Image 1: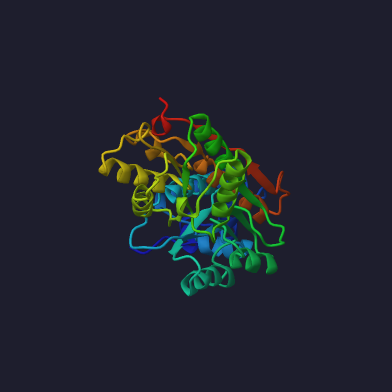
Image 2 (image 1 turned 135 degrees about the vertical axis):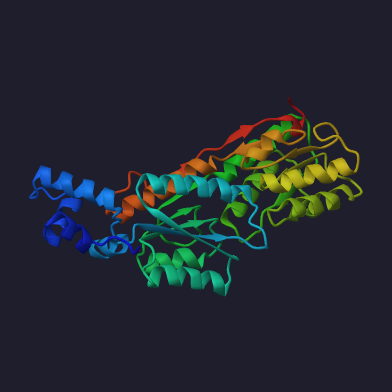
Length: 339
C-alpha cells in the first residue's frame, strides 16, 4: 500500500485539503474538535507529513553539516566520537538533523564536500573542527557569510564564533607538574604543525621550559600524526637517544598511549623509569595501564556548545558569547609518577 496523502485524509474525513492541512499545522482558525478528529484519523491511517515540502516552505533544511577531517581506512579517533555524540545529542534537542561526511583534511574531496553542502543548500549551518594554520574553510565560510561555528581558533584576521580550549595553558600545567616531579630532561611528541591546537600546545610547552630554564634539544621534539602508532614510533626514537628523556609530554592522549606501549615493550615501568603525559582526557586515559596523566578537555560538552551556537545563528539569535576560551584542568594519574 502506498503512503497516505493529505488528499486521502481529507476524503476520509469529508473535509477540504486546506482544513486538514491547517489542522495538522495547529492553526488557531480550526476548531478544537475538528483538529482532534483530524489528528486521530491521521494517526489511524498512518499519515506521515512530507518533511521535505514543509522545509521548502520554511526555506530551511533544519540540518547542520559536519565534515570530519580524518584520514585512513578506519574512523577510530575517540576525540571525534566524543565530539560527534555531543553535536548529535544537541542537534536532536533542537529537532535538527546532522549531515556528517568524512574526508581527508586539506584535499580536493574535502573542498567538494563543503561546496556540495553549502551551494546545494543541503544544510543551514556548518561546524568546523580541528582548525588549521591559514584555514581555507574559515576563510571561505566567512567570505560568503555562511553560518558556522568552529572548535578552535585561527591565525587569520577574521572574526568568527568559536569554542576552544587554552592549549598553551594546558601544556604549561603539564610542564610545571613534570618539573615539580624533578624532571629536567623533558621531550615532546607534537601534533602536526599545521593544526592550530598543535601550535598553541607547542608554544605553551616551549615557553614554560624556557621560563624554568629547562633545555629542549631538537632531538627531544618529534612530530606525530595524533595516532597511537605515531606515538609508539616517536617514543622508540626518544628511547634510542644516547641521553634519553626522563619525561615525555604528548600533544594528545592517543600518542601518549602509544608512547606508554613503546616504553613497556622495552621493559620500562611508566611512572617510575619514565613519566608520560597526554592531552584530552579521552575515556581510555583513565583506564589505561598505568592510568594516564592528562589535560582534561570536555570534548562532548564542546560538541553540544558549538551545535547550540550554530542553531542560534540559524534562527537569527544573538550569541551570548562569540569567543569561548575554556581553561584546562590537569588530571594527575599514575603515568607521571603519582597515584
